[in-house]
Length: 313
Ligand code: NDP
Image (cartoon, rainbow, N blue to C red; front, side, top):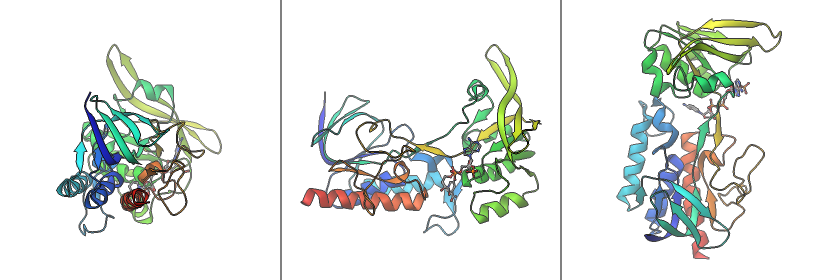
């Protein structure tokens, strides 16, 4: 089994991971970064990113992530496709294993594993997952060209998904559990002014409706319940996009690092330091407040600087 030594192992390849790689590579820490199962992270499945500074006209998320990766490579970061599958944080240096059978011995570790889309938790949602139910509008929207779909949620992701789908589909229902969107004002204005997006306020899904014949499954509608008067109604739709937020990806560190009641890694205020010396956290895995690409990038920068300073002492 091959063994690698590094001053800094970075786990995750969103804006936090790549920015940590840029900074730690420039600090001669010879970082090794494992990209994980979704190289580039969540931004690779968003459409155009309009609020990342430096791109006045906006740019597709996937291209921004490619730019960040290339910038890290330029400074010598060792970027590897694949996953870290085990991590022993009980003593330093930290012993890690990858899915391609490498052992990595790391003086410091930066956890930048991001977050994964949440599901509603309905049994029928699981039945039709991949057959009419999705959490990725940019991946699956194409299949609903000229059809009718529902997006569930009221945040920026739901607004962005609804707008993206409104350009492909005849009609988009945006189903939200309250009577006011959580999304940023600019996204709210766009959604509310889109001619083929219809808001369905104060409703939650209680069932995904569809047909199952052998391996053939089709969504035909969604059953909703009013959040105040409990009245039920059905929308006829061909697809359902769930956009109700994200959960931090903490499986690797669960039981080792301190986490809060919503599973975010706890960091010392104003720093990226976790409860274990030499282990730092950056990006959405530790951010319950902002969760923006730019704040993730900034926290990756902080983690790299914190790791560098830690090794100097
Ligand atoms: P959010 O947590 O912001 O929003 C989740 C939405 O889903 C809320 O409206 C919430 O309702 C609703 N919701 C949560 N659970 C359920 C449930 N079980 N049933 C029905 N509805 C539910 O998540 P997002 O993914 O939208 O955004 C996460 C972060 O990423 C935010 O900070 C956002 O600003 C950022 N982001 C920024 C983008 C951009 O700037 N272009 C694009 C996408 C995301 P309620 O409002 O009642 O709590």
